Length: 161
Image (cartoon, rainbow, N blue to C red; front, side):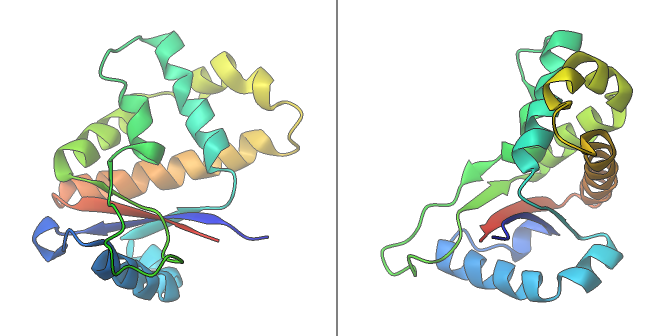
């Protein structure tokens, strides 16, 4: 089974805070994901996004911060609740507003992947190729969030199954 966490940067004024509208927007974005990824306005992680989140959680060992910026790249933002008329098959959606995107970008820019791996990598040792896959996701997310933050964009997240 294929399942992805899909990230899409978008100018905040272009977003409607409506689950049905955002689900349609994200569905269209997912259909054009390859082009949007190449343009730097989209990113996605296959079913391993919880491992990426676990890796980032190691940041609390490296530099405890009550603001928990390591939660922002994967699970950060607020849920966009289904509206009464929403299709129940629409994906779960999260919206990370521009200040959160900027904090996520700062975290990803300043955190050392090697330090995270040294703090948490033993947890992933049973997963073949985990280090390379997590490094690739970290680099993609760092670039994606940096571009989104520099444009002042929000990030919409959807889970596609």
